Image (cartoon, rainbow, N blue to C red; front, side, top):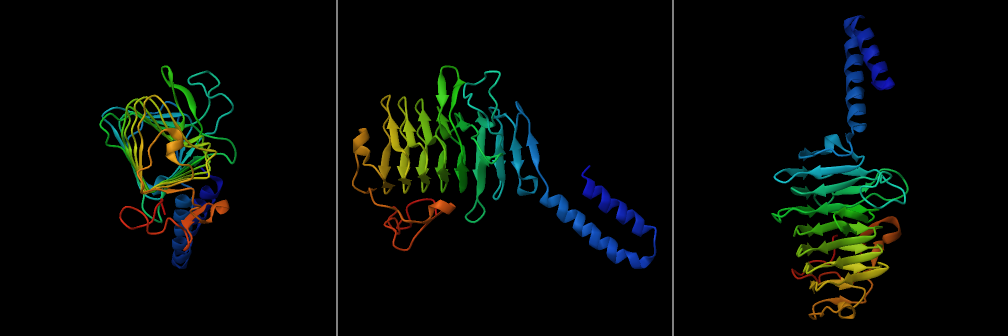
Length: 302
């Protein structure tokens, strides 16, 4: 038990042995103990753990020390305001080599990570340096949802399944989740789609990654109202993939990558984030993305 908690408990016990006037002090100490416990709450997920149920803010942050798995037929719900921190690894990106050491999520069942505006869910690294793995979604029911999530500092994993890699912070494998109002930054790739994945990608901001969106092996994501800006490479498409873009602000014309622009997108215009250097990806009043989404709202996550 934490030293400070023990100290408070001992003080409470001492005051109980005193007179009635000490009760106010006891109440105060009980309140301090409660606040301390809440502020220091965390839940550790060990390597190889199977997870499901509901993750609440009261158990946050959730520390993922290795591979955490949602089995087929199981569902993990993550509530608004939850912080998920992943162990960062070294240079070894090959799974499951003995020196592979980083946290990641393998979703074979269903993930419902539904934040709210102003109470987003955060997926980030545990340490102050390095990268964690990915959120790999292989949910064949296509029921998984990530909304109002901030995802940062992800890195690819090689051989996450036999003969294939996962490169996106959100990596869709034979699965078509719904991804909306998410900000994805400082990762190898924002979203990667493989093996006939067709996720709905709506109102997201994907910026400051090595790749914005990657599509392989007959995947066809539907990308709408999304900002893809200031990534080292906007896209990587191959394997007869067929992504579609509409009402999005894109740094590079998708035609450069073999994908037709349908005329509703804004190509090459700076979205004018308020302060990207400080992680503020809200739009300035003079942003060209203001009021230009398909519903006349703003393009992007915020």
